[in-house]
Amino acid sequence: MINSRLLRQFIAVAEELHYGRAAARVGIAQSPLSQAIQKLEAHIGTPLFLRNKRSVALTPAGTVFLEEAYQWLRYEEVAIQRTLGASGGETGQLAIGFIGSVGYGFMPELINRFRQQYPQVRLRVVEMTTKDQLEQIQGRALDVGMLRTPLPSVAAQIQTRFYQRDELVVALSRNHPLAGRKRIDLRQLAGESFVAFSREKVPAAHAQLISVCGAAGFYPNIEQECSQVASVICLIAAGLSVALVSGNLTSLIHPKVCYVPISNHTPYLDQEVSIAWRGGDTNPALHSFLEVARGMEAASGKTRRRQA
Image (cartoon, rainbow, N blue to C red; front, side, top):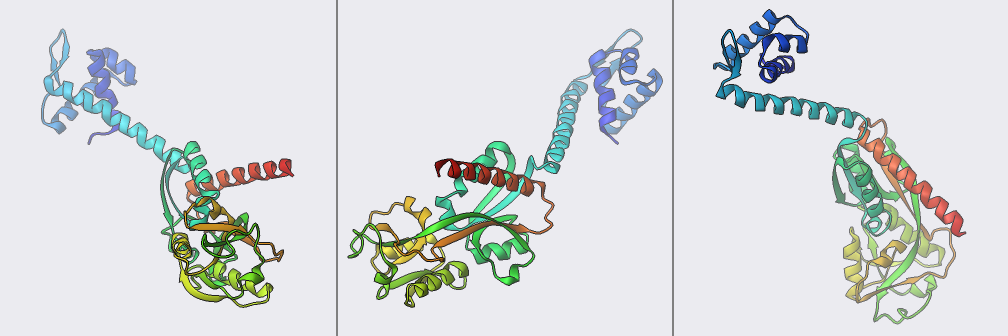
């Protein structure tokens, strides 16, 4: 059977072309080395060396096998390094879910920083709702998610860390009578039709709309429900509804949609986004990702304090 030790013995003979020097190089006696090479040739089924009392030379087959032996040992080294890297979170795989709004907020920078620090980790990044992320994290199809919090009680085994609070804004068609305002009082929306994030797929955002409008003294007239940010913005552009969306989305420019800040000061106007993962998950790449997120969050906090 061919193994790395035998390959190194063969390479020593091939490079030295002298059994005595090769034996000293690999640290065994000349006779066992000669026997090992003979067994290797018998295993392969062809001579690798031409021998006489004065010289040793590679056969054409031996020359080919030497190149393959070099490659074999390189693969072995790469395999070892990749395995060690995976154990330290430097290589491996990571499946990441995110809600659409963070795609216009902190998510791109976080992914970019992680890729810079851990370029060997293979990433699969997928947009999906909070509900779908929870299901896939629990089912081990996702390693980590960026989603709305608080989470329902069914997600008790999932750990979260609050990451960002973002103020809500009103999204409405540029043809809407309130589109030119610098700020909108929520009570001015009491008679409007709303497009809401799905109660089933995005429960936190749906509940927040109810809470915010309730604090302003009315129950929203929800005529449309969507699961994805792009769908919400398309319905707004069509003039069908208004919506309350994350302030991150102001960077999502649509020629027929505008975003207006809310003048009300209620305890419900902030949206919470957290990073979530399975408790007890031992994937080293996950822990590397969480460290990068923690460092980015700490740097962002220092910047906010300096600006204040």
